Length: 70
Image (cartoon, rainbow, N blue to C red; front, side):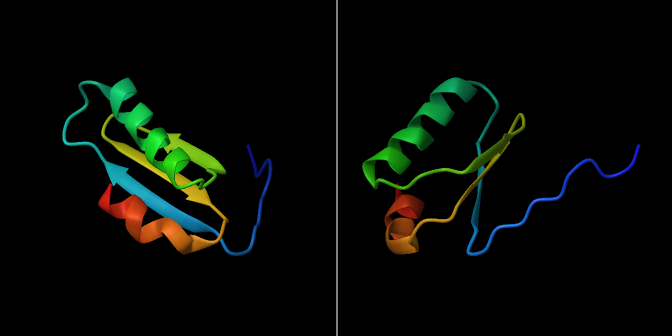
């Protein structure tokens, strides 16, 4: 099949969040987005699976400690 595309961006911060269980995935994602919104931190990319979600952003990492604690 071959490579379709390659992307590159400087200063990316990757965040991995694991859910305790798969039930309530929509509620779990909503709470994550609420935390990012509270700290005015944009999300560039999201990947999700049954128990793990990954987010990336390239903003100033000013609020990463607060986001991690939330």
